[in-house]
Image (cartoon, rainbow, N blue to C red; front, side, top):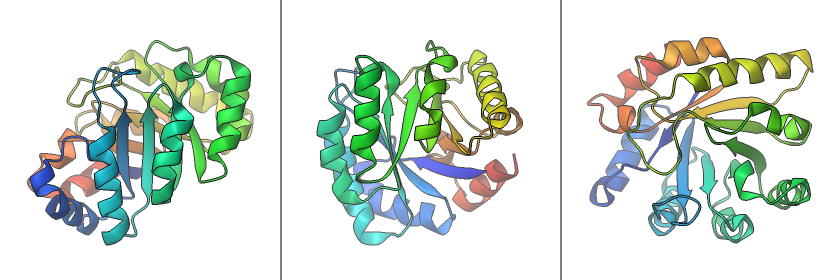
Amino acid sequence: MDISASILSVKEEEAIHTFYRLELAHIDYFHIDVMDGKFVKNNTAEIMKIYSDNLKNITNIPLDVHLMVQDVKRYVDIFSSNEPKCITFHLEAAKGKQEVLDLINYIKQYSKVGISIKPNTNVEDVYEYLPLIHNVLVMTVEPGKGGQALIPETIEKIKTLKKYIEENNLDTEIEADGGIGLDNIKELKEAGIDIAVVGTTLINAKDYKYTVNKLREG
């Protein structure tokens, strides 16, 4: 299981030092939470662009860009210059099937593509797109701010999604994001996630390497 470190709660004055510490802890991805103040309440686009530019200059660890925005193409254009490994957009941001397909094709010009779903969105809504995308990001909290508690019902969605992927011989990865820590990582791993997005649990830890290893062990 891979660990994608959410840098949403990183303090700007400590950013470069924190990024180096995360790199030394051998995380698999830097998770870039891009919010526009419209799709979700908070607006992090400016600081996340600064962080992404910094990371491009100091590390080879890939960027995992999560767009919590209404105007998906606009932010794909902004963040694609950082050469992310994957850009994920929200199913709920698209107005119908054709726009979802258009966005998938648009993002594929720049990176792998993922679709994210909110806790209240039915997991079945993403099934038809699975053969076309690299990963599904299941939000285990309401998107928009860090430090929330994981919603237990979302674990069942992950299990359902995993079962469907296996039964249909798909290689789509499952990523989970929100409220993930040492107390619930084992349950999520058993449910079938391939990538865990971890924010405050990791950023606030004293020993990053120890915490990353513990998370990976589940």
